[in-house]
Every structure is written in structure tokens, then in C-alpha cells.
Image (tube, rainbow, N blue to C red):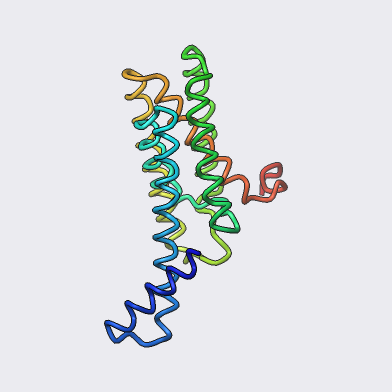
Length: 194
């Protein structure tokens, strides 16, 4: 369905601005990504409303999108799987914020932040088979990833003064991003130092 809509919009745009037919496919991919992203964001925000966790949903989306845009990590093979995975991860973070006792927050933060910094140092950015990065981009993305993650770590600590539940949710969002990064790495790389 999304393919048909994005193709129709791409053909319409290409026919109205004099773009050659070979650029229509590029338009279609961009529109396809835009529609998929909007639907996923709407899905997460819809779940946030149902779970009475609107701030958590907004923080989840901003944290998840900003960190993942530079770190890379597992990409689902279809848009539907991506939608389900993203919404499922959000629900897990929201439920964890309710289940985890505030007393466990500090230990959780130390483990997640330590592991997160190690994973970024060791594995980020994770390339997608369809999107290889030039060597200079790899170093730049690693540094940007680190800066963004440190920003979210500081934000998590600051928010803990206001809402431990929201901080736990942010911490879990970062933990799940770590898992998506590690999902792409062969287990031999994780167990054996190279």
C-alpha cells in the first residue's frame, strides 16, 4: 500500500517539475521512508496516549531517532517489522519504567551507561549493507554518536530529579539501542578481542 502511494506521489512530483523518469525512483524511496517514519511516529505516540505516557513517548522518539541516526544497528527487513519492533521497544520501555523500583535506578544507569560507552567505542557506527560509510564518515559518526549519547546520559540524570520513571524509560531506551547495535555484530567479535 505504501509502495503504491509513494509511487503515485513520486510520479506526480516528477511530472510537474520536469524531472527525468530515472529520478522518479529516488523520489519514491524518499517518500516511502517519509511515510513509514510518520506512521511509526504516529504508532508510538498513539501507544503513548493509550499508556498515559505522552512525555515518555516523546522522549523515547527523540532519544531513539537522534542516537540511531548516527550509531546504526539492526534494521528490520520490512517496514511492518520495523513498525512492530519500534512500537514494541517503546512498550517495553514504558512498562519497565513502571516495574523497576526507583532504588534500582542507580545500578541500572551505571550498567547501561558503561556498556553503552563501551559499545560505541568498539562497534559504532554499524553499517547497513545498503549504506556503506566512507572511512572519514565512520570516525565522524562515532564522535557524533558519543556526543549524542553523553547528552542523553546527562539528560537522564537531570530528569531523574523530576521523574525517576521517565529516567528509567530513557535509560531503557538507551539499553535497547545498545542491543540493536550488538544484534548486528557477530558473536565471535563480542567474545574475542581482535
